[in-house]
Length: 554
Figure 1 (tube, rainbow, N blue to C red):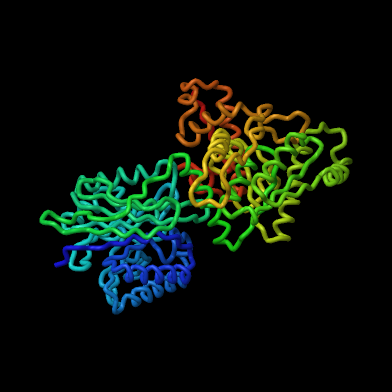
Figure 2 (tube, rainbow, N blue to C red; figure 1 turned 90 degrees about the vertical axis):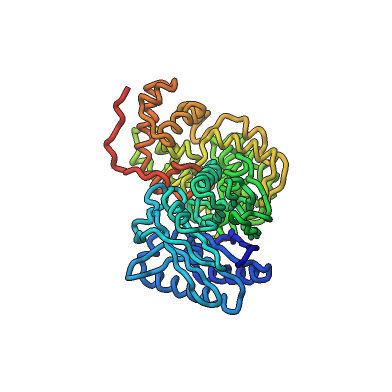
C-alpha cells in the first residue's frame, strides 16, 4: 500500500487541432514528471485535441487521428514508474465521449467519461458527445481515484457518486475559460463538493488563448476540510508538483507551492495580453499593425500589443485628415515614442478628395453627413489592410464594447482587422485600465513600466474626429450613463422597466436599446476579441440580426 503520493498538474497551453504539437508537449512533460519522481501526472481537459475543438469533432479523420495519438502517448509510459491521466476524446460502440485514459507501463489501464455535458454559455458538448452512465473511480497506484471532468463538479451528483464508491482522492481536469471573478466561483464550487464528500480535490485548468476565449490556469487544490492548500500561476504555464500523505482517516496534503491569484485589475489586463499573443502566434503571426489616432482606445491597444509581443513587432500608423487635431498628432507621437514602436504618418487628404470627387455627381444636392465621414474611416481601413498584406502583420482593431454595442463604429473602416483585445471592455473600463497600466507593470509582459499613455490622452473628451469639433457625446449619451445602461441591458438582461427603476431616463434607455439591436449586423462582421465577461459579443451572446422584438414595458 502506498502511503506517500506525488501528483503533478500539467498546466499547459495546447493548441486546438495541433495534435502533433500537443503530443510533443505532453511527451516533454511526461519526461519531466518521471525525472521529478512523480507518481501521477494529470493533463487538462481534451489536452491532445485542445479545448474546445468544436466541429472538428464531426470530422471522422480528426477523431481517428486524435485517438491514435492518445494511444501513442499511452505507449510512452512503458518502463516508467509514472501513471498518466490523459483527457482525450474516445469512442466506444460508435459513440464519441469526452473522457480520460489512465496509462501505466505502456498500457491503457482505465477509461472514464465526462457525465455532465455543458450546453450553455460558450460550450455545447451535447452537440458532439454522448452521455455515459455515472463513472466509478479508477484504480491508480492501488488508490481509488475519482476523475470528475470540468462540468462534473458544477453539479453534486458525480462527486457524491464517486465518494459512495470509495474514492479517496478527486482529480479534476478542466478547460475553464476566464471571465471576471471566475476563479472565486471555481473555488466555491470545489469547496461545496468537498463539503459533501470530505475528499480532497485537485483542480487542473489549462492556460492560453483560443480565439475569443482565454484560459487563465490558476489550478489549485483543497484538502478534506475545503481549505486551499496550493495554487498555481495565473495566465501562464506551470508544472505544479504536490505531495500527499496517507493517514488513518485518508489522504492529507503535505507539500506544494502556493502562488496566489493576481489582482482584480491585473486579471482582465493579463487576459487581454494572453489572448492577443496566442491569437497572433497560434495563427502564424509575429507582428501587428494598428491605427494610432491619438485617442484612448488605440493608445491602450498599442500598449497591450507591445506588452504582448514586444515593441519591435508593433507598427503604429497615424492617418490624419483636416479634422485631426494638433493635440491628436502630438499625443500619438508621444505615445509611440514612449512605447518605442515604429511610427508612420500617412495623410489621407488626397485619397478622401479623390473618393468625394468620384461621388460628386451622384451625391449632388444632398446634404453632407455620415456617408462622407465614413469615407475617411474606410480609407484608413484600406491603408491599414494594405500594410497588413504587404508586411504580413496582423491588423489589430481598437473599438471598445460600448461603441460596438451601439454601432458607433464604421464597418469596413475602423472595424477592419484580425483581432480586437478590448472588444469586451467598456469605454469607462478603457480609461480605468489606461490609468492602471500607467501605474503598474503586470507580470509576464514585454513592455516597460512608467507613464506610457500620455495623461493628455486620458483627460481629453473622446472624439472620432470625422467632422469639425466632433465629440462622441454629440451622438451618444455620456459614457458614464451609457455604460450603466448597457451593463443592465446586456450583462444582466434586465427589462426596460427594471433599468428605468435604477434611475435612468426612459427615452434614453429606449434609444440605447434600439441602437443595440440595430447594430447586430455590424457585430456579426466584427473581428474576434478577448472574452472578459459572461456576455461578450460573439461567442458569449448570440442574438438574431433580423429581430422584431422590442421591450414595451415602461
